[in-house]
Amino acid sequence: MTPTCVCLHGWGMRGAIFRDMARVGWIALDLPGYGDTVLPEDYSVAALADRMAAEAPEKIVLLGWSMGSLIAQAWAARHPQQVLKLVLVAATPCFQQRADWPHGLLVSDVVAFSEGVVSDWRTTLNRFLSLQARGSDDARHLIAQLRTELAAGGDPRPETLAAGMRLLAETDLRDQASAITQPTLLIHGARDGLCPLSGAQWLAAHIPHARLAVLEHAAHAAFLSHPGEFKALLMEFLDG
Image (cartoon, rainbow, N blue to C red; front, side):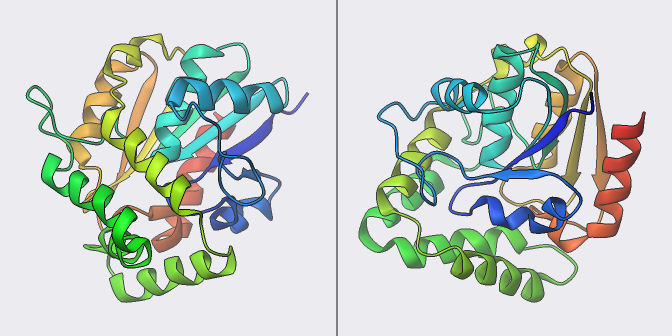
């Protein structure tokens, strides 16, 4: 039986960001709290992974981008019989810097985003989208793409954005990396300013069966900015 391929989006976006993947048979899910889905009380990666796993097909290939990559890591570790292969895009085990983790955003930046969601979520979300594109070959075009995708999906709920920002600030999955036993492909933009390449390099070294593919001219949304290279890497991994 051919496994179903499932995509998980990042903070502030929706599953529709993966519409090109949907055209070739992938399922792009809305994370809980986005679209028509309910915002659960427990918005930890473990709870979200368990919730989505219970509603997904029995055997899947799982792709997670940005915040979705955190949920995908937890899903693969907690439900290894369900996830056959794992793809992590712009991934990190820990979004925010810590005393022993220099590979994330500054605490002050995460606090500013969190406060901005409360005071002016539209401006904050637009700033976040701009950071995703910064450094890419055609950053202006990519920002326009991201904003178009955001507008097409309707306004996200401020409470969902706030819950997601808390998740990004609090989550640290470093101790779970060795529990991800599936074949894993990490695709990362060398110019990613939100999730530094060094974090993906750490994951590639600590997930037992992982390999890292770096797109030298891409930033945080390589599947949008460099779709040809991205799809070639993905197909090679799935066919292997």
